Image (cartoon, rainbow, N blue to C red; front, side, top):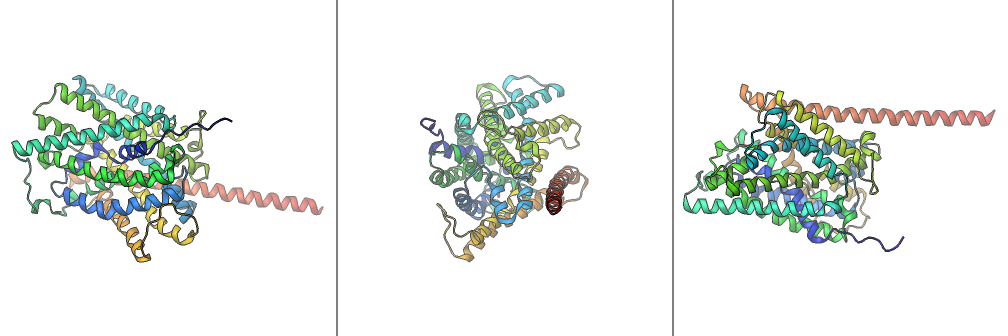
Length: 474
């Protein structure tokens, strides 16, 4: 066979990929909508959520290396039914997220070109964005590593620029919002709490790097190193960029869909010019980087689950010399395309936030069983070598598991359920609630159909064995 081809995924590429996957520039605006208390929530969730989640992901990712990711961990801990739920929730979030980014693409192109796009032209642009992502995801991560690295660098550049401009504005003109100790404490009002899930979303995704293991030079060392270093860098740039947006725009004027670009425009006092055009172009590139980096992990997980009988057969389809999961990639494009085509007739016209919120709900649901799976695998599979092992007593591990799981459940309640019943709130929230229920029931239907098919196979197998036995007796 000759000398094996050298892996292209170095430690630096792994760290940059973690940054590309986890750092979500477009989520900065919904977080800034919380107000100054976002800084409290950032610090609190970095300690109560990111730290335990990063530790557990490092152990699980280096112990159970493969394409399955969180599906594999949950299936080994709780069985195929829970594995099927996790793989469905984990997958369906992706085309919804893809659709939410597609609907902001025409606005970015308008900023870049100055051309206003009518509805039909905007939909065509959105479809081109979606299927370009699908096409790129037909190729291995190592072939796209330059895209991931480039997107990570651009994201950090945007974050540093917005933070630096915010500091300059603060020093020369003062802040758009009052910055006092009391204003930075959590207000616990329903409006701000509904955005806490975005911070948690911003801290999720470390396990995606585990699905790149086959393309790494030394995954058992690179995975924990990438998670630790990437996590520290991400925490720093999130807080820095959050400050930049926080001083730029009065909280009640922040647009959840275009807040980052709004911040650049207000900080520079310009709605056009080469700088704004350049920022819009770079921001557009980061959207491509986000979707490409996540598609590689999500598609591998969905395909792996389908090969194990826990997702529809279409997701198991592979193609090309590298046997890439093209079935899952095509389904991403189909679902996202349907969403953007029907978007203009939806009542909620903040389409980015509507699709993004629904994506948030399904995504967070996929993680609920992951943390208890960590603890259960420690109990039922203690002898498997763990290259990276989280230390501490049994009580410490229980606390480590409980903290992030409780944070996710609370976030789901505030994001998925209508807690205010005035007409305006219901018109914004009910589509998200209904969508979450529909997609959840769809996942349960998949489990039910798979169960019937498996029972049918077992039944027919037993009947065939009985017939063979009777034939031998005769």
